Length: 256
Image 1: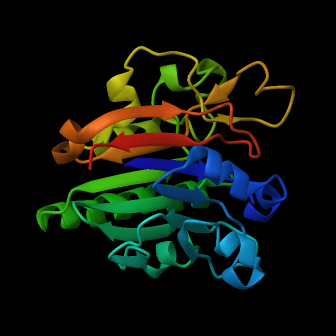
Image 2: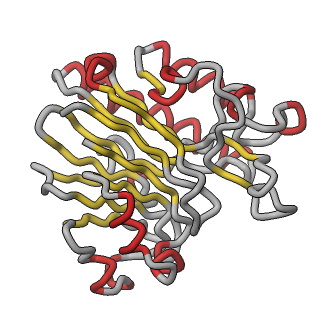
């Protein structure tokens, strides 16, 4: 089973760049999108009905902001939006959860903490809500796949210029410490587990100063799994060759 995750930074802009053709070339079994920036009533029929896929969309209360969507070759057993723990975190359209035979998939667009300290605290609270939700589902016996734009580069290997960005949200010690905490509960960063020493592997680049061409980037997009799924992992990858957004897709291949 091929799973892809991609922050598209505006689905309607990506649609103009032949989104349906991109999906056909990637041929994912499941495609998770973040930062769609659109509510369902703003979408074309072509977007909602990509050939061979059903889709589910989750948008926030604020128009043109945030938003996630998931595309499925085989319809999920069930989909829900939000963690159901705190309306502050469910109202921005960041969370789409789908149930599949053998696992639960969380498609998440994590908050950005760069605006101010209040927004940074919101981001950290969101992280804690995710952990609480995931632990509850694990206790119920569900294997989990968590994907999306984490909005944090975990370690120095995950960012081109660590020293210059150590005081920038997305690479703050407090954010990176939370990722350490998350992993201490057993959640596995599939790409880094497979490629612990691979450098210059990034999924986001600033639109300025030719950062993508020079590969001055950050690894912000992840597939995490619970340990019970590790033996089913066949591969994980980053796909910088796929353009259309300031992020590129990341993928996970599971033997399911």
